[in-house]
Amino acid sequence: MSGIVPPSEAPDSLHFERVVVMGGGCYGSWYARQIARALGRGAMTARDVVVVDHSADCKVAHQLAEGAYNGLPIRHEQVPWTEYLATWFASPEEELAGHAMVPSPLMPHLCFEWLMARAQSRWPDREVRAEPLAHAPATPWERASPDHRHYVSFATWMCPVNCIEPARCPHTRGVRDWSMPEAMRDFARTDPTLDCAAIFPCVHRTFGVGMIDAAPIVQADTMLAERGAQGAFRALVGTVSHCHGALGVLAVR
Image (cartoon, rainbow, N blue to C red; front, side, top):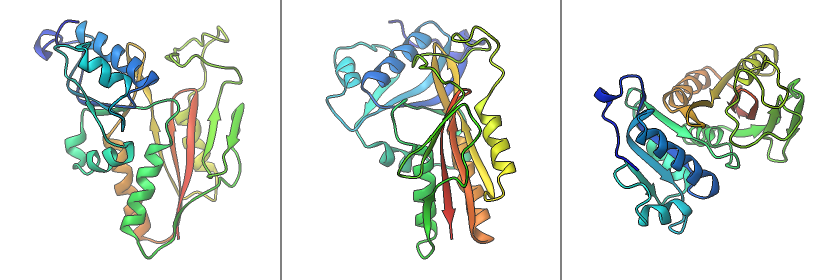
């Protein structure tokens, strides 16, 4: 693979300061490979690409040892996801501009977990917990889990993991006239049991790789801190693509 294309030579490409891929196994290695292709072809530039996996034996670690990403700014950090986020998101909001996270389809709801951990640390004498939704969103498919996380989808069929959710749905062959971020913001506005919402869109940026901007996650923590200073609240936290999403209600009493 060729090396990174300098920003001055790729003015039309996307540029990131840091891209963090969650997981270095089956999904993470595919994302890392697609990012490498995008870098090599000048579709994007990045100063740092970090693949986070607690295992030294993950697939990306082996690929790095074999020189698969030679000349590209891709590295493996052997640390649990939650521990990495605690360090990464400790940076000021302005320093996270140009940072993005690549989620794994099977990972926990990490944005929710981080915000809840922050709330527990901020208010050790208050009750901070995950609570169930008062009622389910009106999406074609939805399921509640025992840990009070809720999963939603506009698809009632099995979508391929590498679908980029284009304007025309590959399954229906028709126009995709739905978008989960707006749907969940509307849901939060119309649910009287919810006081606020933090919805994080996962957008497909290049070569089939979906990313969540990092700065809005830290901004949401600031928003919740201000809301909690006024009293108890229930906040809807959602990490969503156009078609699918993971939800949780963060309650502070």
